[in-house]
Length: 247
Image (cartoon, rainbow, N blue to C red; front, side, top):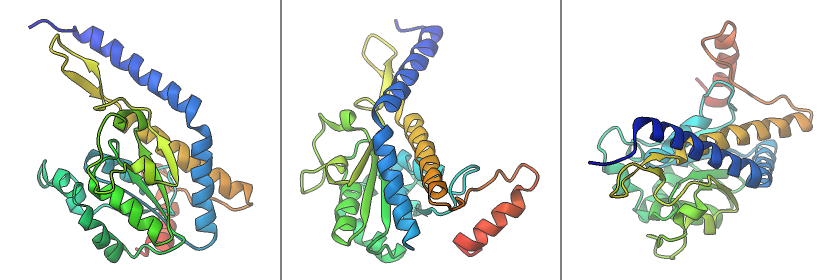
């Protein structure tokens, strides 16, 4: 069957990835700064910063959490039903259940004044949209990492007809394409090369550093993890774990 060669795909994916990162650099600076201000303002006022995502988007919540060079003041919402390791279809079913959102609020104790960041590339499924709507109704600020262009042609699966980017207070657009995969590999139009994890992780790192800069601008030392694989890292991290996670 005719298709592109390995070398062609290798070069095309590199070109597509760098193109999307350039798009992020050109379009998302102010949104990142706005999100960082919201997060630092909440933390400085004694509130909390939660992060979550379902399916493969859960990786962006993990990108925030206990990462070398990452902020310690992050609370992940990563119940096993959001992840992929138990069954490949389970998280897909769960992320479409809008009615599951109140369970998350009950279990994790989100409160007015907190910030909730929701990662969802498609932004169309019931649970992330309902989480955002419920959070705003309870007085939280919602930040989304999503693909505005990628979801434009798709209908919402939430009863409101809204998508995540239409509900969130601050939107970080990962600039991914519809369907996420960006490289056509054969004459049938089959696509591979998903972008959202790459561009999403880039946004996570940019946002984390922007929050750290907000700490410093306010004369405060940002709580940042070191790698546990460099000398002195364990001692630094132990204090952060004790303070933020009580372990």
